[in-house]
Length: 352
Ligand code: PEP
Ligand code: MN
Image 1 (cartoon, helix red, strand yellow):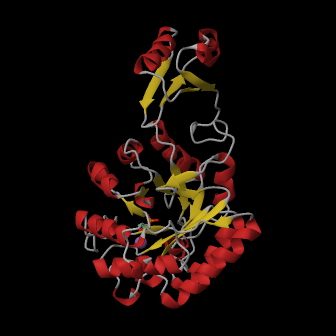
Image 2: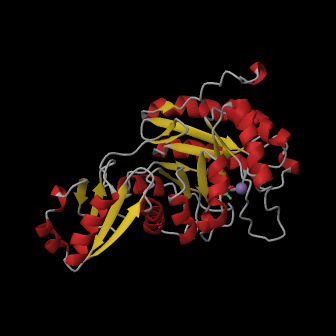
Image 3: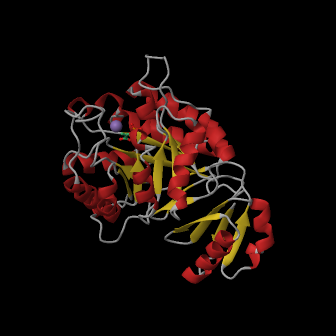
């Protein structure tokens, strides 16, 4: 059972609810989020009915939920959610393309990639400054210097930025630059990190763990939601199977399955799942056709010299086709392609 407090409820209102539940022998977990406070209850649910919780001051809703991921479930919220990233919507009526380099390497490479992203129909820019590499000898990212490059490129192009955070200690710093925080596949069950991004006040893109079930993925999202942050986008990015022909196996059925169980938007990463440039367009088509709310793709001006994931990055000659796929397939699935945000007036006219 979950008690959702009204946006204007006070701390005393939440304490009153928690106190009533505890006095009745139950447990109450109070999550004070950025926009509202949520109280998870466990114990004798039937007995709580006698407490008349819906009538308590500051209570907005009291919901009985049978699944272990409560706040992100459709039992809690029937309508599919729209998440806004610096105003850019991700949800059931739109198709949102996110594109950019796997890793931020230089200002020139990042700007060039952002312009490529725009040409591919993207409305958000991706790029990693903190890279969770499988090998400790591989390029680990530029850290804060990379975040500054991303922020400069956002200023120049108008594209809000999505970037990964791998350490709970870096969450505040990354959130100060990013428009959306990414939690990668290797960190899907890093619970302190999930709790930290849940309290950061920015939307979060949660990639599916490469060995995680859909239920585990949704429970990971619940860790973020429990901190009061329901601005979460799920990203299917391929899972480990016996198949070696691709880097991972894109679990396309996870998209409608997750959308049926959760109100959160679900996007697909055809680049990290296939791991090969020639698969990105076919997998993008599949993702759009199956009903994904967006796609996130790698692009790079010179993939042969890329410090990370060059073989899967789209190049200039692929962009027009990706843009055309996104534009022409979206109406067939009842969506409109999310436009890039309008350029800000201070922007250089050459880049508008
Ligand atoms: C990425 O998007 O840069 C990334 C590392 O993806 P994943 O966590 O899916 O491997
Ligand atoms: Mn990558």
